[in-house]
Length: 577
Image (cartoon, rainbow, N blue to C red; front, side):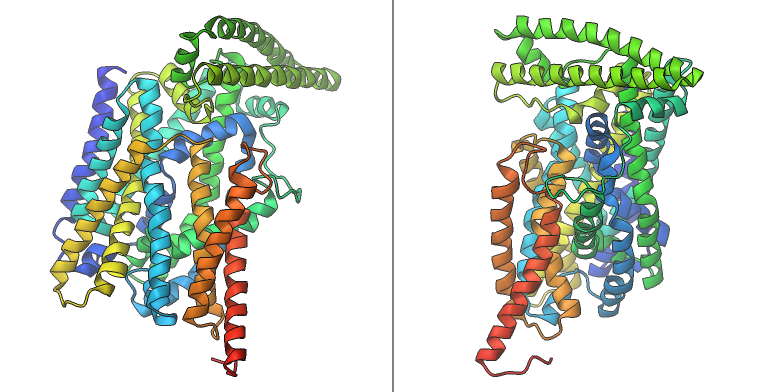
C-alpha cells in the first residue's frame, strides 16, 4: 500500500466516525437514543436495513463463494421479498401501534415476562457472537494479507464503531450507514469495471459471461429437492423465507432500524426498498466474484489465496512437494489460457462442435485445477494443522491488492472496513438496547429518570462493544465467514420466529406453553445441528443449515400447541381465548 491508499483509508473511516458523532450528539431521552426520535425517512431506513445485513463478510466472502461455487448462493435470498411483504403487513403495524422500543416488549404483553426475557436472551447470545465475527472477519483477512496485527485491527474496528454508536445511538447508526452504503457500492462498481478492463481485448462482458458459463459458474437455479444441498430454489423460498422473517421481523438490530421511522408508511417503504434491491445487490456482488474467476482464467493465481498458509507450507518439510505442485499449476494455467482462447475463437466463428470441444477441455482443466488445490490444502494441513486451508475469504482481497491501482486499493479496503463498522454498529446498538430495556429496566424495581436509562443504554452498548472485541480476538476462521454468520442465525432464528408466530396467529396459546416449548425446541435444534451439520465437512452435511429456520419455527409452534392443549384438557378448560 502506498501513502495515497493510507490517506484514503484513514480519511474515509475517520470522517464517518466524526460525521456520526457531530450529527447525533445529545440524545435527551430514551426515544431519541433508541428510536432516533422517530424522524427517519424511508430511504434512510432502506439503506440502513441493507447496510446492517451487508457486513464486511458480504464483501469478502461472497465473491469468494462465487469464485468457487458460482452464482447459486443468490438462491439464499429468494425468500426475502416475500418476507418483506409479510413484515410490512403484520409486524410493522403491530410494533408501531403498540409503540414498543424493542421487538421482545410485545411478547410480554402477549405472553409473560419470562417469555420476553427468554427471547431477549436468545437474541443476545446469537447476535453477541455475530457482532464479534463481523469485527473478526475483516481483521483476520487483512491481518493475513497485509501483515497487520490481528488484535490491533480488532480493537481499532471495534473502538471506531463504539465511539459513534455509544454517542448517538440509533440516529448515529442510521446517518452513518447512508454514507457507508454509498462508499461500499461505489467501490464495488469501480472494482467490477476494472476487472472487465483487465480481461483480454477480445473478451467483453458478454463473452466473459459465456466463459464463466462454460465452467458452470452461472448455474443460478437449482430446483432439486435434495435437502443436503445448501442452496436450492426450495431452501431459499422456505428456509430463506423463515430466516428473513426472523431476521427482519424479530432481530432487534433490524427492527430498531424501522422502528425509528416517522410513520408506519415510512417504515414499510424502507422495507420494500430493501426487498426490491437486496437480491440485485447480492447478484452483483456474486457476479464480481465470477468475473474474478474469469480474470484468473487468463492470469496466474496462487494455489492457495491465504498467504499465511502458503508461507507456512513453503517453510516446512513439505516445501519441496508444494513447489512441485506450484510448477504443475503454472503449466496447467498455460493450458487454461490456450483452451480459453480456443473457446473464445470458436464463439466468434459460431462453430458449434468447436465450442463444445473447447468447453469440454475447459471443464477437464478446471477439474485438474481443483484437484491441485485440494492437494495443496492437504500439504498445508500436514505442514501446520492450525493454519486455515479454506481460502474463499481471501480471493477478492488478493485480487484487490495485487491488481488494482494505488488509491483504489485504499478505497476498497475502506469499503471492507466500512461494511464491518456499519453492521457492527447496528448489532451493538441493538444489544445495548435489549440489555438496557428488556432485561435491566424491566427487572429493576427502582424508579429512574429518562436520562438514567439513556446512560444505561450507552453503558450496555459500550459493554457489548468490549465483549464483541474480545470474541473477535479469540474467534477462529470457519469454512466461509458469510456461511458462519448465517449458520449461527439459523440455530436461533427459527425458534424466535416461531414464538412471534404463536403470538400473532395462535391466540389460545399462553405463556407457559410457549416458554417451555421454546426451551425444548432450542435444545432439539442444537442436537440436530450437531448430528447432521456440524460434524460433517462443508458440502457433505446431511442437512442444509437453512432448513434449521423452518424446523425451529415449525417445532416450537407444534410443541407449544401440544403443551397448551394437554394443559387445558387436564384442567378441563376450553381452547377459546
